[in-house]
Image 1 (cartoon, rainbow, N blue to C red):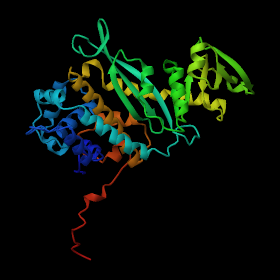
Image 2 (image 1 turned 90 degrees about the vertical axis):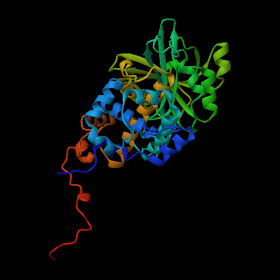
Image 3 (image 1 turned 90 degrees about the horizontal axis):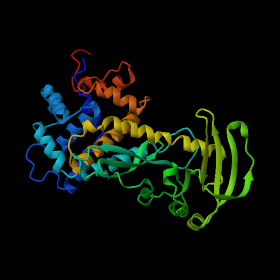
Image 4 (image 1 turned 180 degrees about the vertical axis):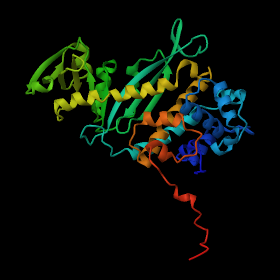
Length: 388
């Protein structure tokens, strides 16, 4: 019988503790803390994310029911509802934001050469935002409408491995297009966006930085056709044109040529129009790039499944941001483990399996692959043979 580490501890082995302690020291996270450290807080919150706990009482009740295993999980301090609530309220959320960014850097290196369905050497990002509704009376800082509160999660997702490379948490009033002023611009990369980000001045700045974009056009888009390229209509393509913007403000904000690709999607019975500043890719690849933008929607689906209104463990801005960043760090940590262990199943399936096996002592590779696995480290290599 395998009597090694808990599944939770095997996941947390991929957490760089030296980086975590650097983040804690940077913001004095353990200042005047005697027992329940930032690492204890992180382990408790990571456990809550991986097992879909509903409340602080739920977290504490589940952990106390396995009290004999807490030490082996890495939790050294006493776990109580008040202690955990206070830690979420007062300990700087930037500790976990910096940790998540460090993990993102590690994950991107691991997924650098991954194929995401298109034969492109360029990095491809999907940019989008999702709104998380909140009760305004409980979250008065999250202003959105007169009688409704909300926060927005603005995310730039690297489609190689579905790794979030940029996340900005704002109140519900910030329009998505303002995110274009915040995201890091990488020369040669593709930025795929929905039509909510259609701002020609910002898109021109993106183009001037030697980056490419693919974005849906609005229905009232006005342009002047310069040249029509031949297309194969049997593939769903309707036209591939080089155009110039018409109208005073659009032509002033984007004075260069644009490429307009019109595509009919038979699966949804919709006609889509895309704009891009790339004139070298095949038009069908432009349509496929936009189709892969759906990966960011799947990422938001996972975030919302773990961050329902009733599962926010605190009402302060610091508590909400800390919980979101810890959730992101757990997501990226599982992505790192997936790559290092060469697991073939999806991240979402891995998280579902981990949620029901977190206290087991089975080798994690065996749980995630459903194969028999013998841990060779169980044999004592220092034991001498009695007989030769």
